[in-house]
Length: 113
Length: 111
Image 1: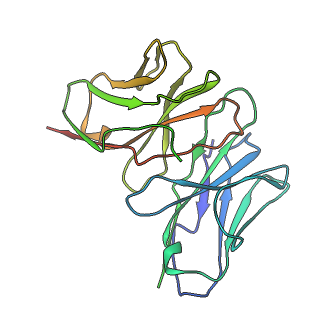
Image 2: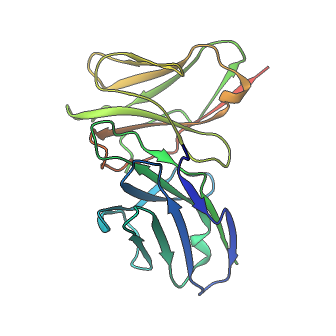
C-alpha cells in the first residue's frame, strides 16, 4: 500500500517563475493538506482540499493556489516566486473518519535563486 | 500560533528512556494532544495522541497530567534512529482539522 507520494523531490527555480508540485494521497484518503517548511522551522499550514474544493487556508498570499482532482490527488501552484519561497513543501493526506491521523509525504524541496 | 511550548533540544543515551515534555496550558476540553516526529529531511511521522488518559503504542507512551496542561512523551528504550525533531500539537479531533506546528524539540540520542 503506497503512502503519500510527492513529485518532484527537488527542483530549482528563479525569482518570478511559477512552480507546480504534485501529491498523490494514501490509498483510501480523500483529504489533502499542504504545508510549507522553511529551514529550521516547523511546518506551516497552507491549505486543505476536500471534494475538490479549498476548505481551510492558512496565512499565505494568493500566489499560492491549489487544486484537487476527482481521484483525490492534488497540486500546489506558486506564482511569481520569491527567494523566501525556498522551502520543503509537504503534502499530508487523511480520511475524514474519526481516526484523524495525518500521513505525510517526503516533501518537495524547492530552491528559488 | 502554536499552542504548545517545548524545550528546544534534549540529549539521551542510547538504551535509556527519553522523556520529552510539552506544556499546553490553554488546551480546551475537546482538544487532543498529538505527537509527531521528523527525521532529517523526511516528512513528519505520527507517533501517538490522547485526550486525557495515558496512551501507549508500539512506538511510545503518552502521559497527560490530570489538569491536561502538560504532557510527556516517553520513548522507553531510545535508539540512534530516534534522533529527530519531536512536535507536540494540540487540536480538535476530527480528521479534517489542521495541525499547527511549533518549533519542536530536537532530540539527540548518543551512544
